[in-house]
Image (cartoon, rainbow, N blue to C red; front, top):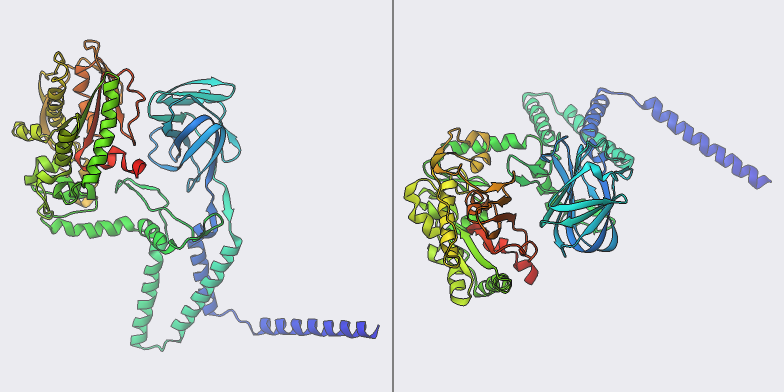
Length: 574
């Protein structure tokens, strides 16, 4: 009893002592001018950093896929309410599925998406499969498949499921209606408290430091300098660009990787990754780049990350692959040539056994036809006899039966007829493409004697495409529009779809399939005149027999700078 009373008394004494000290702190606490300024600075810093403690979580997108095989699925959410999908965020992964598989994707940094689509590629095998239970944000079920449109496949709707039969290597599934969803919110009160306390500590220390500086002329200069310095420190972080793609620079921006996740643990590359992410996104980045680019106005020769200025307003691609193609600095090794030969021979053997003709076409880079306009900043390491294109052609001619053509010779022979490439674009124009077409048809006519070769009826004007000019900052862009004399193809007989990917010409009898890159786009004005059915496909990875069934002729086209990356052989075989 006595011990219990003693304990109660001790507790009361401690409580009274605590109240005394709290009252003492409150009585001695004064709201000073330094405190007010520090508190205001703390609030401003905390608000400026709201993206760290008040964020929108990724939008979850889940679906069920039924079938067998593997594919790449790319989920895209569009910020704008249109089908152009220029303001997108995406999430993609390679999946393997057997019977019924449930997959969930997380699309980051998309607050209020308006449109939704699914891109499916690298499907193996190319069999019919089923999609169902497409759910956005965990609560929006898109099960009315009559509101979807599909390109690259035939489809049927059966029991709230989409049964898809592939017709192309790339399938686009578009939801045609407007979405009305908002990304889930994630609030981090602990992080908010930490940021607030640290901000106040720094602000209070800085304010008191400035307060205690002696009031003389030198100290005033120090105060001004420190104030301006810290303001400039805050400006870059006052706004963070959350876009994933820079259309001005024509590239993807660096992604953010957290310092720690439960799945991956500690990220030891966080420093470098954060530096790349911040350098791509800080406030006024485009302004500082434009200021930096103004120095190029005073240079006769200049080079940006994407474009090299040549002579007489000519522009050239400045990517590493393009420059190495010009310098011939990295010729193929014997082992690489053997693997290229093995891959192309496999395609050729399949075509021969199936009664088809296979042709491998290499389109020269623009600087190989017009080296006289190239920049003096870039020097050749080896002459063109050691270029990758020449190496491949010589090796295939000596070690295989593959029909290969490098179109450099025919383009060089006809460059006196007019401009074959646009001065401010990396592609050939309709005149250059026509001579490329003649080179291809000359090779094919050795196997098909009665093949029809199209001859345009006259000439017309071609407006400069200017793709490279569009990659430049505004201050460096050339405002002049260039026009060229090119073949008039208005009398073509072939009828093509809007994308110029599928063409029919009833006056011819053989079928053609072309696997290629952007240089095949202009070939669509000529090749369909020589064939009954012509299909153009963008090459992605290894070629597969799918789609070749109806073809009598198969062409694989690659522009020179993409050798060997676009052959799609190294990753699988290594």
